[in-house]
Image (cartoon, rainbow, N blue to C red):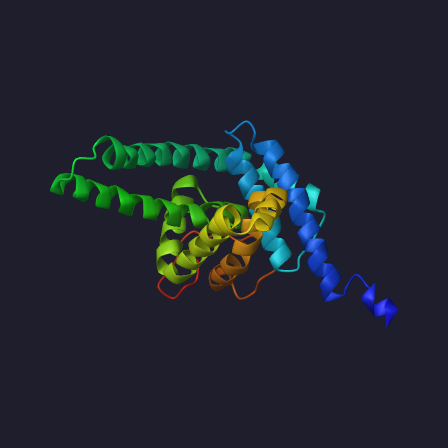
Length: 229
């Protein structure tokens, strides 16, 4: 009985081990995101590891993180800078029409609705773009297109991820102080780990039948749900 309890293959210990990996990922993510410009590469590296954790493909966490960080640095950084600029523009537009231009009018209402819709699309793309970069090889333009396409095609999964993340953050800030401490300890990688359980289910629909544990190009998503070769 004791040998079963202390066996590493015990589901409880495997679960604890994964959260230890998430804790390590948080330290790495914070340290390598400090320059700001490297946030895309560090976020991609986090998803590279969490997607493997969810699939029970655990490897050396630190080595896997730096492997992905190095291999995806250039493209993930380009993606991040594009999205950062777009996010700042959308944020300014919403701030302008919601706060600075606060006189009620039909035009203001229309602009708030337009930029609110663009902001929702932005969140949809952000949900999938870095997991896609971590899992598939594609140019920047194709990765952005696939992130938008997947997020809309699997709208239920996307909304579920956004709601789960929002609920955790709101609960941590306003409801459960202990949860706030947990999020501070595990940080963004905890959200990425939880999101990965949903994202893996989506990605599996686009992987070739003869999965050989290697990354495959997601060049084109056809109506049948299979990537082009």
